View 1 (tube, rainbow, N blue to C red):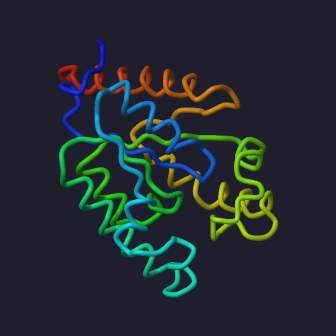
View 2: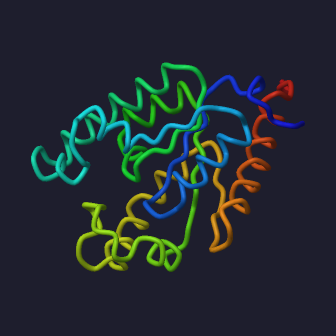
Amino acid sequence: MVITADKISRSIVLVGLMGAGKSCVGRRLAQKLKLPFADADNEIEAAAGCSISEIFSRFGEPEFRAGERRVVGRLLEGAPCVLATGGGAFMDGETRRLIADKGISIWLRADLDLLVKRTIGRDHRPLLRGDTRGILQGLIEKRYPTYALADIAVDTVDRPPEVTVDRVLAALTNYLETAALPSQT
C-alpha cells in the first residue's frame, strides 16, 4: 500500500520529548503525504500572542497545558494534517483522549544522548533550564511509559531526517494495513 492523502482520514499526531524531531520530521512527512503541517507550539504562541516561555513564567504550566489542550483540540477538529505536539501534550489525559479520538499518534522515540545533542544550549525550552542531561533523563523516566501508549512507536536516530521520515511512513503503512484487515472473531 502506498500512503496518499486520500487514504488518511485522521490527523497524524507526532508525540515525544523535545529534540526527538517532531517538527522537523513532521514537516517532511506532511510534504510526502501531501497534507498540511501544524506545529502545536507555534499555534499556541500565535493564539496567546507571546512565547511559550512567557506563558510559563506569567501563568504557569497548568494554564499553558489548558491552552495547549484547546489548540490541539481545535487543530484535530479540522481536516487531517500532520501535527507536531509539544513534549508534554501527550502527558495530559484529556489531550491524549482527543488525540486518540481524532488522530493516529506516533511516538518519535530517541535515546538520551541524541536528545541532549539536539537540545543543549537552546534556552527557548522552559523545562530544560539547568542540567539538560539530568532533566532529560528525568523526563524520559516520567514520560516514556505514557508515550508508549501511542498507536505507533518509531525510533529516531542521529541520521538525516529523511531516515526517520521513511521509518514513520513504513510504520504508518503497516498500522493502516493492519487496521484495514477484517477482525478474526
